[in-house]
Image (cartoon, rainbow, N blue to C red; front, side, top):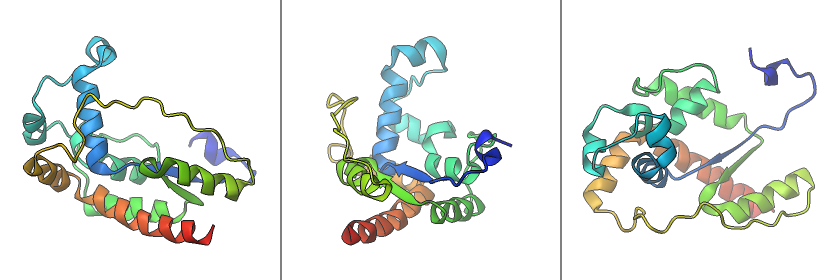
Amino acid sequence: MGLAHKRTRPRFKLVFLRNPIDRYLSCYYFWTRSKYVHANVDACDMTLEESLESNRLQFTDNLMTKALASLGAERDYSVPACSADFMKAFDTLKTMHFIGFVEHMHLSCAILASLLRFPMPVLPAWNVNDKYPGKKECDKSIVRKIMQKNIYDLELYNNAMDFFYMQAAEK
């Protein structure tokens, strides 16, 4: 059992989600270009198309669903996500006090600051990389393949986004 489960004080549970297509592209380019990954991890030496056809499910298959379904417990990320993982991840999302989005970082932080009664933090842009194509610059067939590989993540993301917009309208 993790330390968070041993705490007796009330907890405020929050999560920040990222668009699954953007997450996949970012992860792919990090794995292929990072000196750290090449020095310390089994780096990806495939093209983007090859990575989508491969069985390297660590970053191709519903990573957000797997993480939320396991809540930090040990998990074999090379095993494909399934509908039970989706349901568990969706149930986990429903227990969150706050769901923020990377694509709406400033609004997310403003809502979170309001909920926690903190002043709005200054948010400098960091780790922004415009060297690599995003989903708007990618071939549509690649985007479709990413969507197919991350169907559970897309469903989670869209459901959470609906909740986020309702929360933003209340603030």
